[in-house]
Image (cartoon, rainbow, N blue to C red; front, top):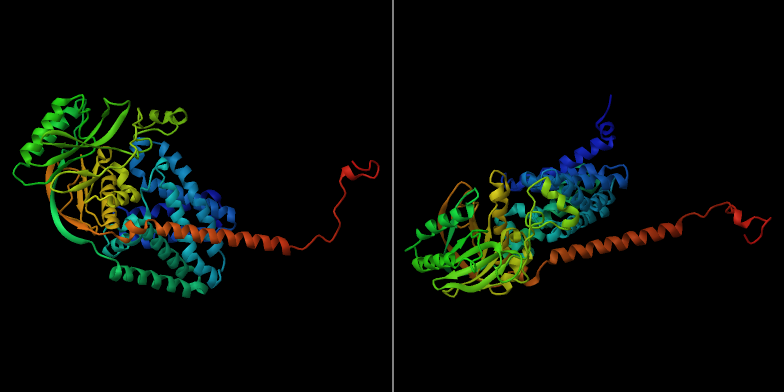
Amino acid sequence: MKTFGDWLASPWRRSLLAALAGALPVFAFPAPSLWWFAYVALVPWILLTRSAPTGRRAVHDGWFGGLGFMLAVHSWLVPSLSVFIVVIAGLLGVLWAPWGWLVRRFLGGVPSPRRGAAALLVLPSGWLMVELVRSWQGLGGPWGLLGSTQWQVEPALRLASVGGVWLLSFLVVAVNVAVAVLVSVREVRVPAVAGLVATAAATSAAWVWSPRPDVDGSVRIAVVQPGVIAGDDSGVRRFDREEQLTRQLAGRHVDLIAWGESSVGFDLAKRPDLARRIAALSKETGADILVNVDAERSDKPGIYKSSILVGPKGLTGDRYDKMRLVPFGEYIPFRSLLGWATSVGKAAGVDRRHGTEQVVMSVGHGLRVGPLICFETAFPDMSRHLAQDGADVLLAQSSTSSFQSSWAPEQHATLAALRAAETGRPVVHATLTGVSAVYGPSGERIGSWVGTGASTTRVYDVPLAHGITPYVRYGDWPVQGSLLILALVCAGEGMRAFRLRRTAPRPLVPPARTVHESPARPGR
């Protein structure tokens, strides 16, 4: 009778199981939003990898688990990238290969209490390095960081104000490691319990001691969401709908009106008639309007996505050009090699150009706004820099029009909660087609979401806060600590390998002479 171990002996079966185990954390992300599941979702993957018969097999378990994770978290990209998403997931899955080796190295067999305790630091550090590397914009950016599953948990948001989403990811993985040890390695249960207690203590300390944002005022911001408008003349009809909705805000005493990403499909310098219509809306409503232009520039070559502020007298001169573009969605990396992606999906036919610096805009009433465009809300460093530069409100303009029936709009909207908690600044997430949302300076939700089926306006009373969170002050210190831990691991492995070489037994017989040492031809 075959056992489960015999079934796993097949490399292909084991690889399939690793991919399925790696995909499990997707249920902790929106839309399911089973935040509690994140603390055990990695356990099957860890248990499988620690049982690998060899280090090489553990590397494969890490790789295929990473492939499954990337496919699941980015499944909403399938309509746009088709089978190319499998290629991308396979390439990025390689980043988890070293993590698989670390799992077996520290938890394989019957680990000692010392090795088990070290795993509680080393394995989360290894996971954080994977998240750090794949957070590079050219590799797709930090979408699907494990810590972002905790966007609705108040204690977790307090932790984010201390160490950002990186600290949340570290602690979530540490809990998974501890649970895996508790259910599989009796000899190391004491360090595992100690790790869980330490995690609870760190969360409690952050709850008690981390500074809370000092709310000292409020501002009324309106979001204009026109909804899905398709067709060849969608740009014109969308503008008309946004104009109609914005006009309804007259007399609502708003301080700022936000339109979504690509809300204007024409360069306003080339279309002064549109600029005048927006300026008339600003005068009628008594508020500046932040629009987003997706068009070829008249003053420089190329297509840009730009946040542009329009007041009652016209363009104010404040402009932010999107810096971090979506790979394949807004440009194709190495187009000469990967341009074929346009033939199998909805990859960008023309590359957008990127901006060079972030901008904080003054919109009247003493309010300073830091714009972000689309998936720039996934980058903790961008919102952190805007807070350092004096932004009172972070305002994200997004679209997600192509992914209305997927989990992407909910995932995108919740990223703003983490950015708010990290910086101690409210975040307004304004979209074309939903989900639009607003979060206060502690990451708490303000008002209700504007869902994907709505074409409407919504006015929010947004609380303002000042002061500096520990994360804004000290930056990505969990990442730096993880780098130090892994450097110590590498040094320890190097010393271990050196000692093994020195203590290896010498051969008992002399080495055989080679043909070049033949007595018949000395010296050859």
